[in-house]
Image (cartoon, rainbow, N blue to C red; front, top):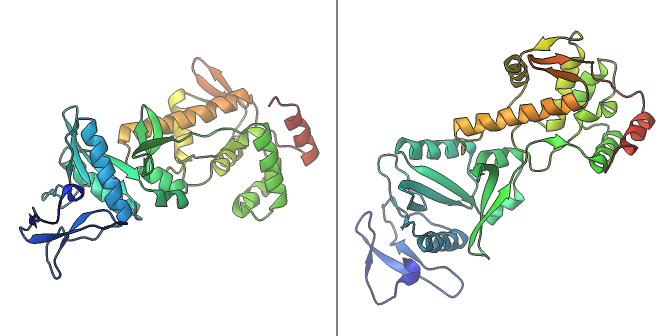
Length: 323
């Protein structure tokens, strides 16, 4: 390891056999560098942050007894994970991602590891804190103790941090009032959805309370969860009263009206399970709002969604809710 090396020794690249120089300094992590004009495929520059993170990850994994190796080249797939280790007889590639990585490239990398029967784990660097929209959360979401989460590597703590991600939940009283204010204050938000709602004889800010939701750290849907809920409320508003579905027909109908995000770090079964949980949670919200009825045979439309007549009526109903 470069941080364990000394200037008096000679070092050689394990890939091409060329001599390499040891680079170290007071403010830069130690690393090995090829000489100029080297054609070695291992001759790739790295940021100081990435070098430091890899060093910490190696020390952490080694302390766990996982026998980590740094920068092992996998010729079959032409990839080089930051670490390759053994966890309970499973070989796992561990990556510390500091720079931008497209979803397409991430899928390609993960497919390569799957081809070799390797597991993989992606830890994000601090740069991703500044660019973490819904699409990026979906891109890097993984499972941690049966919970969807983002995996971070904390340079200051020399260890991993796991950030749980949420599925959509109903908005609480404070969130309802805040969202109502935003819909009133910014009339240009959701322009397409506003027009669609207006064509049905309603105003978007007067949607049923079940349309409002908590969208903090959500990741499953391509569009906003609020828009998704309102679209489904509009669909239910067109259905004949007492229309019924079996549980399978109901979930299929919701799924067909949903645009899911791509989550390449989750297995197909894990992603499908989360999607199903998302649909069931909204179903429970509809049952609680008495829009959908539940029987032993499935579901039926108890009543069409009731839109509010004016803001005052909606505020009054919200004010009566418990905190």
